[in-house]
Image (cartoon, rainbow, N blue to C red; front, side, top):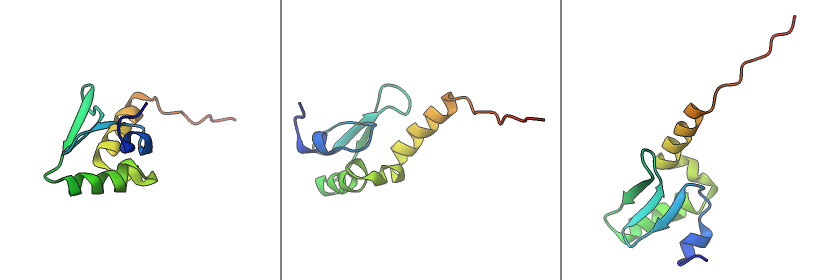
Length: 82
């Protein structure tokens, strides 16, 4: 069960948890990536704009993790039929 509202509202598949000044996501390298913010307002703005919305693709962490997964997935070759 979620401990905080953001835990239940997170749309981003890479979101793990949050703290007062940070958001923890799946790791770009390693098991976790921690995004630190200078104010709670900046962190809440990031959560609202990326973690809780379908615009998560605009987040740098999201984009980097997606690239990591795309590199692991072999490209499909086009089938040429004669």
